[in-house]
Structure formats: C-alpha cells, structure tokens
Length: 150
Image 1 (tube, rainbow, N blue to C red):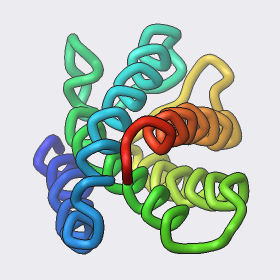
Image 2: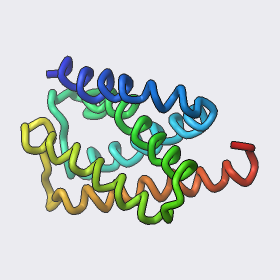
Image 3: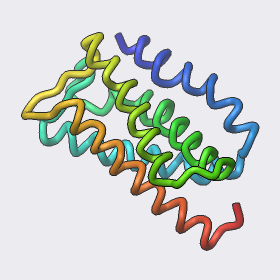
C-alpha cells in the first residue's frame, strides 16, 4: 500500500511537476518548501484530532502521508502560483479552483479506501481545510512578492 502512496502521491505529481520546475524554477523553490510545511501542519492537526487516517496505518500517522507532503501538495501549490503569475484570474477564484481539484484528488483517496474520515470530518471540511491551507500559502506568496523579486 505504501508503494501505491509513493507512486500516486509523489512520483506522478513530480512527473507533472517537471513542466512547472522548467517554467519557473525560482518560484517553485520559494513556494514548494512552504507548501510542504503547511501540509504537514494541517495533517498533523487532523491526525491529532482523529479527523482522518491514511493507509497504510503506522504508529506515527504522518509517515503514510510523506509522499503527499513532498509530492502532490507542493506541486499543486506551485501550479497554483504559476497560474496566478501567468493568468489574469482573481486570486480568490484560482484558490477556490485549486481547493476543488485537491479535494477531488482526496475524494478519490476516500473512494478507494486509502483515506478514512472520522469525528464528523467530511469531504466538505476537506475542501475548507485545503482552501485555508492555500490562503496561508497565498499570504506567504504575497510576502515573497513584497520582499523577493519573482
């Protein structure tokens, strides 16, 4: 099961991320580590409050999510900010859209029984949590734009 997590949540996103890295390496280097950090914080809180678990189950829950922290989350966040840099859409609309895409990806994980919700957590709360995580990353992005030439 962990091999599945690595392939789907790390290898495939990084294959898709090659374009992103080639398109704007500097932006990616500045955004990806912070996106991974935000993902870890949100996930650890979710594990702590027993809102979800990810298979395979380990004594230390976040181990199963490691491929997501360093794969799908930073890559999607990088694409979010590449979209903001290259398109004229309002940031709020782009964040809503990327929150939906990320929620759909997790929804597939729920559907195939890789992700399990508990304590009242639902896919709707998942959408809210991704939206909040992307808003935090957007705040960081705005801070970067103010102090670092992008």
